[in-house]
Amino acid sequence: MHKKILLELEKIKKQGLLRTLVQLLPLHNSRAEINGKSFINFSSNDYLSFSKNPLVIASACLAAKKYGSGSCASRLVCGNYSLHKELEEKLASFKGTEAALVFPSGFQANCGTLSAIAGIGDCIIMDEYNHASLWEGAKLSKSRIFAYEHKNINALEKILKRSATYKAKFIVTDTVFSMDGDLAPLKEIFKLAKTYNATVIVDEAHAIGVFGESGAGLCEALNIKEENALYLGTLSKALGSQGGFVCGSKELIEFIINRSRAFIYSTSLAPACAGAAIKAIDLTVDAKKQRKELLANAQYLRNQLNQMGFDTFKSESQIIPVLIGDSVNALDFSKKLYESGIFAPAIRPPTVPDGTARIRISLNTSHTNEDIDSLLQALKNAKAA
Image (cartoon, rainbow, N blue to C red; front, side):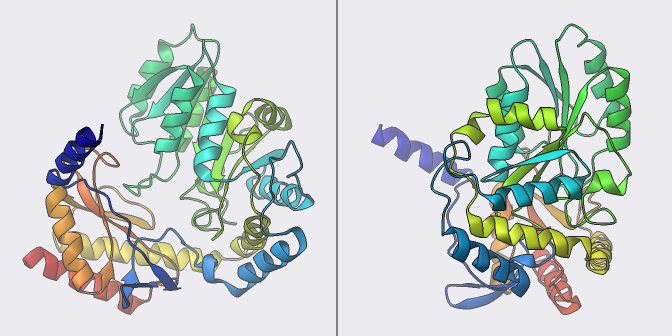
């Protein structure tokens, strides 16, 4: 066994796919210290810079002081606090649904929800670029899984046309895709779902805080309101905390409470995380100016990168991929950026398809114009080297 592992590790290394942990000290929302050196950090998903917000931190501290450092049990045993209920009521109001349910992580929320609501005799229809947590949940559900080409509405409809024999049909998609930064064609998806009697499940993880009048996500931005849909999200990105959630009708949430093994058998969300998220949601609703500036900065950066000859795919959000191609070359590119004081790790397969290794740039509201110009110069220098 030991020899097999060593051989496999060597193979991974030669392919440029070996992953290592980087010890990082967050100094500020746009700065991080690594090995005693300060870097401009373009890898964080802290889009609204709330993880360092004094009001969010104070709310987390108050919750920890009142309820303790951990909840110490599952929600169905003795880990169900009034703080969790307050957060869920706030999330339901935020997303415009009847109810919500909080999980200890976004991965658990996605995985636990899909594996609970779908089963044998049902089918789950997935965008091929959906997050790994959605794929794991679909596999655990034991439903029939269909995948359609990324954002291809015609391909989705073809699958729906031949899925009439399944007991229940679920269309699952991210709203903002985490590695390409592009947006799902949600209006078309919801229209097809109504035509073919399917339930839509959307993951708003990378849209919350950034899109919508109150920052509730892309569905809000497009004025999509569907009572039978399920809305997944995370507390761990723009909300600056940790955890995941699902929003929907009271009946759907009650069903998930009773069927989701990821919920039933997990210790509940730590009080500090719940406290931080409660305050962050309030701040998000009022962050209209920050959202506008963030997306404007992203558009400026995309334009500059395209003029420099970089392929940024079809990014429309605060996530901007820079295509490199080969995994080894992507690692080398990331190293050159590192040497210029820019922290932006290479993203490689299996996270992205073969031949599409990239630098994933993630903007937040703390990045200044000078930060962005420094990134552009570093990318220009790395390309020329």
